Length: 216
Image 1 (cartoon, rainbow, N blue to C red):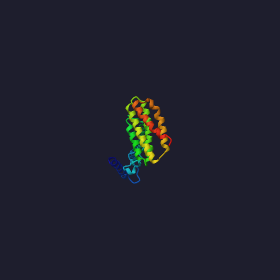
Image 2 (image 1 turned 90 degrees about the horizontal axis):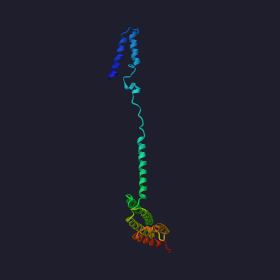
Image 3 (image 1 turned 180 degrees about the vertical axis):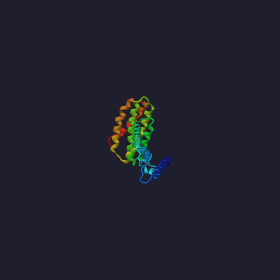
C-alpha cells in the first residue's frame, strides 16, 4: 500500500506540473530530465495493482512431483520381497528353528482347507515326505538330538492319517504305492545314522509302508 500510494502521488505531482503549463507549452528541461530518470529507474513503470502486473500474478499451479506414488511402489515391492524371503526361509526351516512352528501351522491350515478327503490325504502325505527330509537334515547337524525322534513320530502320524483318508476317498489309489516307494528311498539310507530308539521307530515305519507296496 505504501509503495502504491507513493507512485500515485508522484503521478499526480507530474500532472499538476503539466497542467500549470500554458496551452501548447513544453515542459522545462529539468522536468523532462527528472521524468526521464524516473521512467528509466522504473518508478512509473511498476504497476500499482496486482491485476496490472502479469509478472506478479500467482504462478501457475505446478503438478506435484510424483514422488509419493514412486515411494509407495518401492515400499510395496520391498514388502513383497520381504514376504517372499520370509516364505522361503519358513519353507526351509527345520525342527528347532524359530520359523518352524509357522511352517507346521501353514501345513495344518492347508490340510483343513482342502475340499475333500482325497486332497487332505495327499497333503498329509506331502507333510510326511517333508518330515522325512527334515530328519535327514537334523542328522547332519550337531544339535539334532531329541528332535529326530519327535520328527520321526510326526512323519508316521502324517503318513497313517494321509493313507487312511486317501484309501477312503480313492481305494487302491496308485498314489499310495508311489508315496511308499519314494519314502523308502529317503528313510532307508538314514537308518545307519540313528541311535537304537530312533532306529526302532524308523524300522517300524518302513515295515508299515512296505505293506503299502505289496501286491494285492
